[in-house]
Length: 146
Ligand SMILES: [Mg+2]
Image (cartoon, rainbow, N blue to C red; front, top):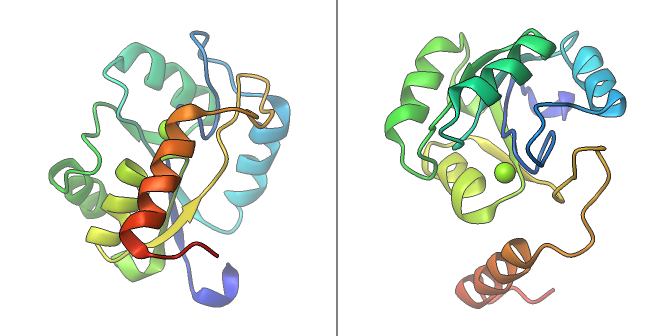
């Protein structure tokens, strides 16, 4: 990723960093973020309407955040981009949903990274119906069944 001149990361929260009701991030993901902070400007952007939940997670990780992000709408993401001192081409958005995180990333010219959903222990969720359906629809739309 470094070779692509990516300077900043916008991270989705639910399903990407953690899941469930507790605002807890696993140690493995916490360590990943600590290490990534050495290389990237990191910002959290969640569609979750609970300011309390996202704020607790952001404070735990010492990161700026936006809640009720409205992805894939561009409106709030543009405000996020205004706060990041890099151009959209230098920003990667990382998330677990094609039709929110990846779609808004593409709409705003960011580099996009789709990840498997994780649970609150940071473990990959084996069965995620939402994601399976999204990936299937995306395949139909793009015709890419590789
Ligand atoms: Mg998510």
